[in-house]
Image 1: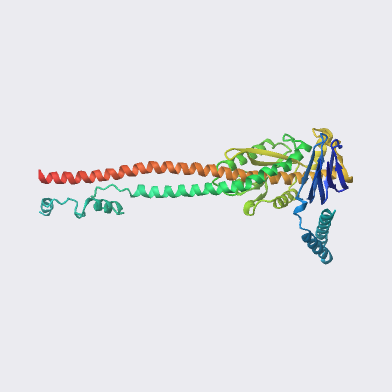
Image 2: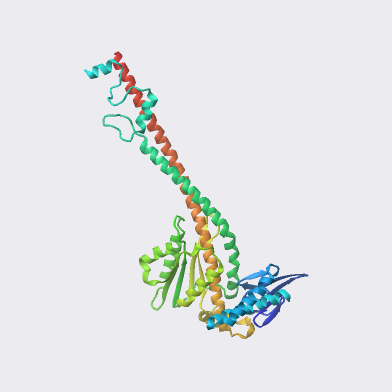
Length: 112
Length: 321
């Protein structure tokens, strides 16, 4: 079973799931094989669930969760919050917002 | 009178040569650049110069082969791993290379540097063939050129068809961010119905396959989904409330950047592999040339010694007789 972070929320995929295309948002991806679970943080991408019970997950960046440094995540979150406060143009605001969303998701993935 | 005196003393008849032992004579004769008029020594200087330059060329090509081998090792794993990026898209959309569209854009991926065998020529040849195939009454094809070598060849006869030209791709190590910016640039500035990416796929160090990958525009995918071969696409439910057309826009753009990433990596691998084999055959050629030159050198040297000996001996026998 795979739990993927779709834009509509965490989605669990079991064999026999209906064929779907899901866009991913930054979040935790966990692969459950028997009793072992491997967790990855995915930056964004797509997941295709085919009718033959094959799921393809294409991510721009995917990192195993034990390779993420929590202190750097906090640092990044504070930095982007500050950028949002000092942002003047829409572009800067959007960039800062993306940074905040990403770091919040990272935080959640590390703690959750 | 002077000549008779010289002959009586057993001296040799060539006025400019002093009677020093034979080895010294030979070496002094062979090293002087200007052979005086009337002297009968054969110069091996020309052959020796050529041998020196061929040996240098052999060293250089051997070094270039080693460099290409190490660069290939670095980039090969990356290229093979990147193949998994576009395979899910093919599983979803299928592959439709023969789709007939109005606006084709041919993206040719080539190298910046030369001395890599024939891979750039094959890629350009295939691009030109695709261009010809897709030219008709209301069809048009444009080029997007990546790489100095392809630009040089295509500018000659298709200058007006080249939309964007990108060089110096490999200045920094290749990564996805760089390629996605590139893909974004191309998608924004070029109108297309179908994008055809031509590159050399890396099969092994000695074999490269010129390949064409097709990426369709979102409108075309929708059209094919309704009427054509992509009817299975309708059976995929789209999560999250986007309509199929909205998600198709993102999907095709992502597909293009994934395919570009893989194409650029494979092309870089093929370039290094082709350079390795070109430099290898070059050093082997230089080695063979060196062998042949050595034979010529030795023959020339022995001929000149023999000539000297004949002169001395005939001079001596003329004195006695």
